[in-house]
Length: 508
Image 1 (cartoon, rainbow, N blue to C red):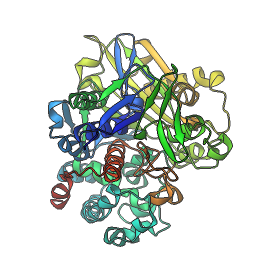
Image 2: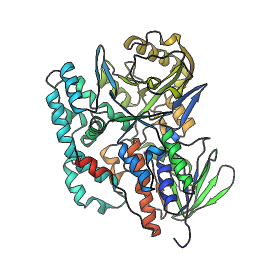
Image 3: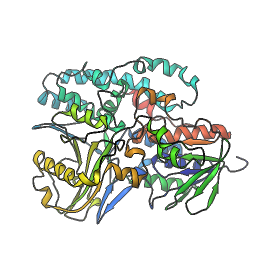
Image 4: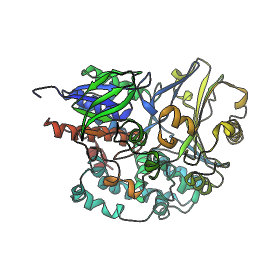
C-alpha cells in the first residue's frame, strides 16, 4: 500500500482479533478498541477470587480453522496456545445411563454397542455419510454472502439439497439411530447455535460430526488464552489494542464510516471500521443517527440465553469428567420451554466443566473450579431473575449433587459468581441476553444474515456470531477472515489464502 490504511476494530473478541491479526500482518494500521479491561469478549477470562474461569466457550472444535488464521500470518498456533486434545471428550448422562464420547471411531462404536446395542451400525454410517456432507458444505461457510450472486456458484449447487429442506437435525438423526437418548448425543451441539435440535436446520448435523471426527481441545489456562494469543500475535505485527476504551458511536458521512467516537470524547479516524460488538446491540446503540429501534431489532429471531455458575471449590473431584452434560428428564420439553422464551424450565439440562482434572493452573493448589451452564430463556419477556436466581441456583446445585459424584458440592463452595440472562444483557451489552446471538433459522442464514460487509455502507464490516457464518468459535474466526478479505479486496491489497482444511477433510 502506498499509504497505510487505518482500520478501527470495535471489540476485542475472537472475531475482531482474527481480523486484527490478518490485517496488521497485511500492512494495515490497526487499532482495536475494547471497553473491558481485557481481551476476549464472551471468550475473556473471568476471575472470582483466586479462581480463573472462561466467561463463555469452554472447548475448541474444528481446530484447523484457528490454525489457518495463525498460518495466514506466518505463525503456528501452538507457539501461542497450549492445546490439549481430550479423549474421552464428554460424559453424557440421562438419569442413570451415561456414555463417554470419543473421537476415535472404533472406540465410540464400541461404547455405543455397550450402552445402546445395535446403534453402533448407524453411528458408522453417520460418520461415513457426513464426511461427504461436510466436504460439500465447508466451502460455503468460507464465502461471503453480501451479494445475491453468491448463490450462483458450484459450491452452492452442491450443497443446495442440504439447504433446501424442511428437515431438522433430529429428522436427520432419525435415519441413523433408534434410541432417542443416543440421538441427543448428536444433537446437543445445536446449543452452539442456541437452537432446538427439533427446529435447527438439517445441515447443522455436521456440528456433531466435526466433534466426533476431529475431536475437541482444552487450552491450558482456559480458552481465554486463545484471544490472548491472538492479541499477542496482532501486536507483534503492529496492531494497537486499547483496553478500557468504550465506543460511544460510529461516525458516518452518508454511507461512509469515518471513524469512531470513544466514550472519553476522543475521536479515532479510520478508512475502514470493523464491528465486533454484539450485532443487535450495536444497531440500536452505536450507529449515530442511523440506528435501529429496539422494537425493530426485537422482530428478529434470537437464540436462548444461559444461566451461569462459576464456583471455586476447596477440593478436587478427581473422578468427575472434564466435561459432563446432564440431560433433562424430558429434554424435548426442556428445549421447547427455552425456545418458547417465556417459561424458565425447572427440569433443566446442565453442562458442567471440571477442567481442574486436566488443568492445574486455574485454581489454587488442592482446589478446583467448576463452570456450570444451564440454557434458559432470553430476556424478551422480562423474567425477574433478581427474584428467582437464588432459588434456581440452589435447584441446579441440588441436581448436580443428585446426578453426579459430587454429592457434597454445596459444602465445598468457597467462591461464587452468578450470571443471569439479565447480566448478559446489562453487563455484556448483549441484546436480549441472547448469548448465542441471532438464531440460525433459514431466514437468518447466508445472504439473509447480516452481511460481512454491511449493507448500505462502503467501508463498514461485521465480524462475530451476528454475521455470516454464525455462532461458535470456528465460524467466528472465519467471519474475521471473510471480512478482512473483503476489506482487502476493497483496498486493493492482495493476499494468499492458507488452506489446511481441504487436505484434512479429504482424508475422511
